[in-house]
Length: 166
Image (cartoon, rainbow, N blue to C red; front, side, top):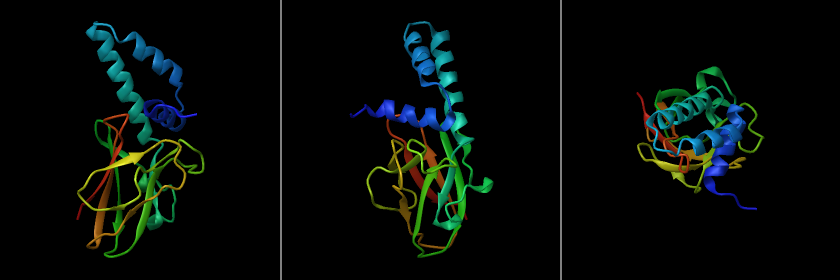
């Protein structure tokens, strides 16, 4: 059975955060009215829900032996944008994903939507739906520390990008 993308991403958020998606759906449906207080409340709940993702997702890849070390835990840097950094070597082939501690579970990872070699400073659509072993691939042009971003501004289209920090 094929489910709409927004339902699948809600499943990722629910499984990673451990929230009850039914209560989230109910609050969204009751906040469709014209009452600005209810709409603001729904936005706050949604933001709080997304912020909890950072507590559960890690940057995991070949550069850290696929571990879930605290230094690779995603941190919120802007509303709905999370990041972690890693030291990389020029020309080295790196695979990575954003993942919960137990990466073997479906709906606990964000990997590629379309398999391709990522380039720094370019945004790519991600897949956070039933992802298991759909790793991103990146080969840096120079050695240094790179920041890996996961942008969840649109629940239907998570975005991944990489920038050289220094």
